[in-house]
Image 1 (spheres, rainbow, N blue to C red):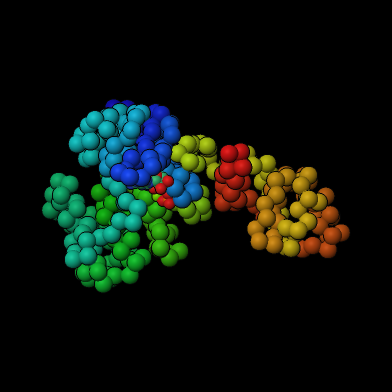
Image 2: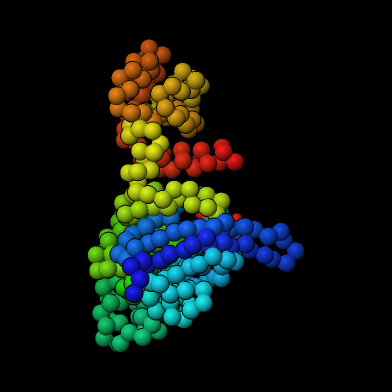
Length: 308
Ligand SMILES: Nc1ncnc2c1ncn2[C@@H]1O[C@H](COP(=O)(O)OP(=O)(O)OP(=O)(O)O)[C@@H](O)[C@H]1O
Ligand SMILES: [Mg+2]
């Protein structure tokens, strides 16, 4: 079997609808995920993440290009691929007339798992996602976050070799998100491969070994969070309150971004003293911290938007 859990080569998708202009959602995506890896797919709304996941999980056909799951062509052999994968789709909902316990159990049984293991795995997944208390209530009576937890429980219970998770922790509270992270780590510890999308960049950082940034249907970054941060020109971030109006003064220190009235600058540590001096002389208040993945993302994607 292939060393790669997932591989796409020059993957393209153009949506064509009656009476509407065609939409080129993917314009040649090359992506590889090794077995056991946890990879995050990041990008702005409409970048093409869901389109990619839907093609990779055999729910949608590409316009052209190659998509392979464990070396099998996912477009030509969807039935062979499906047993290896499990999906949390974007905006998926549990069946409203089932309880979380029934939802998870039924799904496992439909995948061919025996009664005993299905019961055991159902209990474990519900417990992991903090659903034990709500396990026997109809999904329709659950809160939004509890329903989303049910979706995640359903998929982690499969222990499938390759999991596709499209914004799995959306709407979850910070505790629930951490349970999701712990579950994904445990699964990848057991050998599962994970490809997820998220707009929570702290989550991407906490969870992924590597990340891709997609912008307008193309990969613009492939690397670790650390590499991405380094690529934006420094590891420290200085936020200058009310500094946005005086951005010009600070340009020479690094890339500046105005966020409301606040100006943030990414700097190399060796230039920090000089920058602080200038800020103090200008009567401005500064806060210094490490560069976050979110800042690096804003800069890298921002640059790419500017170039177009
Ligand atoms: N069924 C469809 N028909 C036509 N265009 C579509 C369809 N589905 C998606 N698109 C378009 O394809 C592009 C990519 O959409 P996609 O859902 O893959 O983005 P995304 O990266 O998942 O965004 P988000 O972060 O908002 O979930 C967008 O321009 C979107 O409007
Ligand atoms: Mg999406």
